[in-house]
Length: 474
Ligand code: DUC
Ligand code: ZN
Ligand code: ZN
Image (cartoon, rainbow, N blue to C red; front, side, top):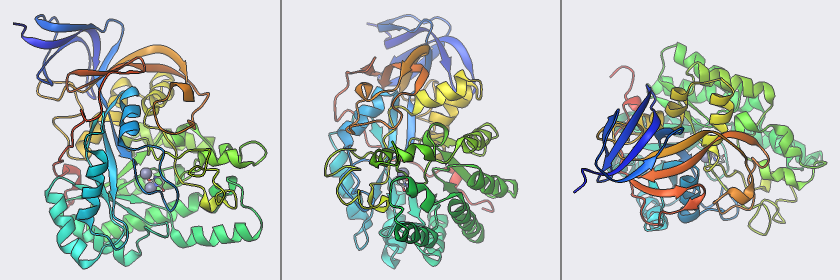
């Protein structure tokens, strides 16, 4: 009988720390050996000339979420996780959103129903707290954190989600008490409302004005406010989807003060600009790029790279939040044509996250291979209570692996995608570096765009408390 189920032979194994030529042996879904020359596998994969990296972990994904005030999402758990594995990602952390007035526990159960039996990759849930009542903060949230939902997101904007300052403080305080990590969407509600109404009064309703309605100052102000509240309560926070210099500098300032403030950024902030929202002659095709915070400009790309290179950002996530472009559920729905404010807010990206960072980061010489692994996998596992177990290639870790061709040139296009959306906002972007095989707990689940896994193979992950959520003074 063979000693191992699978040996990945002859590749270059890359972790957040090391780059080595080695074979990887897998047994019963786990990595059991990484060594110069291994033998005794039932099956072998020749990875000569290829990189062998931890499968991507995408800690910011929205699936089957009743839209930010609008139509149904383009991805359920089946299509969204299919897209993830096709792109080399083996674990995602989507959100379980609490609608106002609803029980948090019931909301979590509802999302489990959406995901159970449908997922191609492993998944956990962050919570979204929209209604921090005394019973939510006193009972439901601490119980859910104890049950393995150890992080949650709060919003400083959107009619249905926004928390006021007092509520933010209450929620931060609760997170501190139960050891959860808080993710904060930093854009100021009142400023956006003010700008939106002013633009609409001036007839400026095309998708492009979405960006004008929430400029960098709005994100900077909210970032600073969130940091100040977190400082008051002495709770660590993660500022998600940072779009450019001004919020990046707020996070850096906080980190230099010694506060536990972390940062996440996303492909749209190094690959898209607000000009994409103009579409052709300011027509509705700009709606394809409507997401929040909006993409800014090329100088912002440079600021994001500065933040990535200097360690201001720990995670690079997709913020996959897919909507159709065409049709009544899409970005072109009749109401959305009346004003940018009704365009469903979000873009797909779980399948193209790795390629964009690899190409613009590693191939263009901005980051190392090890940085790439840290930013796309290891740091997500560490930040959100999945480490050890996920996020590296070493004995004892789940055999979640992407085998990657660093030289393969491709152009991102919709026909290559496996998501439910009818477009990709990254259409036409040329990249170098592409996933060849995706392995989930030892099983080959995607190869060269072909899906070999099955829905339901992905497991729910109960997560530990994050060491990054421990208060500074504890
Ligand atoms: N925030 C997200 O995290 N995703 C999509 C839209 C938004 O506002
Ligand atoms: Zn957000
Ligand atoms: Zn998001």
